[in-house]
Image (cartoon, rainbow, N blue to C red; front, side, top):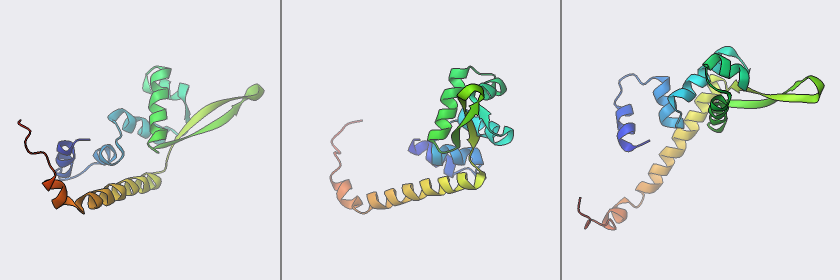
Amino acid sequence: MSLKELQSILNIPNLGVDELMKCALGAKTTEIFGYCILLNEGPLSIQEAAELLGKSRSTVQKLLQGLVEKRLATREEELIGLGGYKYVYKAVPAEQLKESIIEMLNKWYNKMLFELENLPEKIAELDCSVQF
């Protein structure tokens, strides 16, 4: 997310949960929608999610994997007949989502404080000879 995008989000009077998820977790609109589907419909296989979303299996597989990577969902093996299994995806509870966002915001805040420690020296080292 660019600084311009961050500033525009900070200027929104009533920040929605979708903007919060985009800003703090880097979630895309499709991932937020996928999270909502999992949250409302319960645990889903890739095939079930593909049918609900009206998307191809490979597209939904990438979407669900992205949710797992962003800690918006979990993936578990579910046994099916004759020793086989399938993966089932489940949205993390809202409280866990909240904790993930708080953790990310704290990391970002601490990183910014660290970078500001030597700000005067860093500004002095800037190459201001570059022409725009």
